[in-house]
Length: 426
Image (cartoon, rainbow, N blue to C red; front, side, top):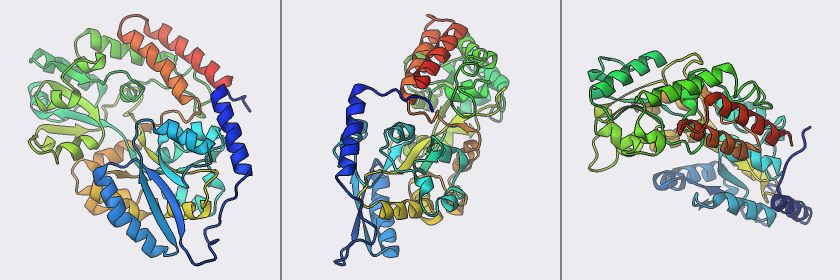
């Protein structure tokens, strides 16, 4: 097993976790002998409308089915949340379970802060009900440390008027067609053809990098050398650079204005990529045109790597020092079952991780939903490594330098692959 690299600060926190855990004991879900309910402390990061459904529909439904349990809901701000979790774990003050950004799961699993749910009763049955790729974001060191509670990905969204000006009656199916349509749209006066977001992580460029044939790692996420800097990956990055040099990419790539949503709405950008919130937010925003009236959507165009996007979403995790671990697992299993997942999907537009819920007829009535569900099948999980934040920073910095003309694509990816392997091997 590789030696884990942990900072002195984190090492001290891990020591505190061990000491705290040794001085406490977990209560069984049925341990309250006085007839009082078992309280499940649940931290979440849902938005206002999502929280409303959680409070008014999800909580009552769960407590009706499990009258011996009570769900205590605490909405947490996203800013500073990671540090708050670290402090909570170190001080034995973490909740029983939490809706956590999927990229954080392996990092906290590495610190022994999360329960290995694959060791809990009924895990196999639960796993079989959930989408494979979102489920994979919980995998670390031969175990699963959470369940996907909702998932998302990005698809291609086009401005209908500019698409028609480019001579296309349907969305481009291939990267070659996308490049052609972008060129024609720019020639017709568009400010941008392909709107890749500013490189502040791998999320903005992975759909293009992956679809053009690029890869991050080998299948078990243990090596970047030979994958991140493979000939196919270098060619993919070179293609994105060529698009920029030829004026086919929107100014969003380098932080320019207008933003992707505004540029698409104003008939200035041919294509953007985004998640389902693009539709759910703008369709309900007063004073804004309905995107269903001016947009056309499809899978990310297919290239040498197929049609690839990137996985986003949140996972439901149980903390190792949870006071009511068994009850938390009961809720986690229930929350990822078909009906609760379908309720959140129908009422909020969140894409369920439960495969049956994703086929709910009422959910599928939303015209854009089926495209996201389909794209999920080929989306790329951001690498489930405890060191992913550090690795991603290296990759992002080098790709930024390529975009700014400070490094050549091969040089940048060779350097990033070497540094990434050093990070995960030390």
